[in-house]
Length: 112
Image 1 (tube, rainbow, N blue to C red):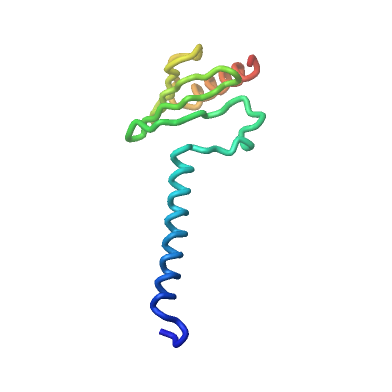
Image 2: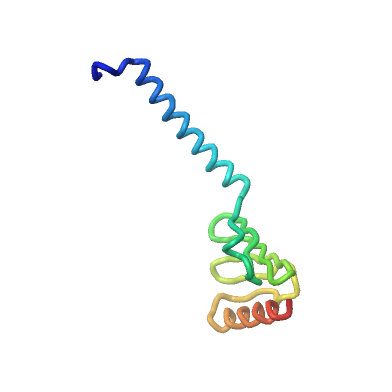
């Protein structure tokens, strides 16, 4: 050690560093836990993904807000299925059906 640094000084510096790192980890955990989102990114949009829940593998459930209406959809690698709402029951993941879903979503956005 350098002549001016004592064991107590080194302990104080390392303790302070550990405290700062622990506070950062706690803050990151709290932000993730509270699911704080920056609303300015979604301001003015009529189509928003409210929440996504992974069911394992590549299957998910998503809550999508279209205007004032919320629709629960199931998502898999091969299809998208509306679980609630007035939209069609499912859409296979091919270009024609994706275009049809896009058209249906646009109609919902313009109605709302």
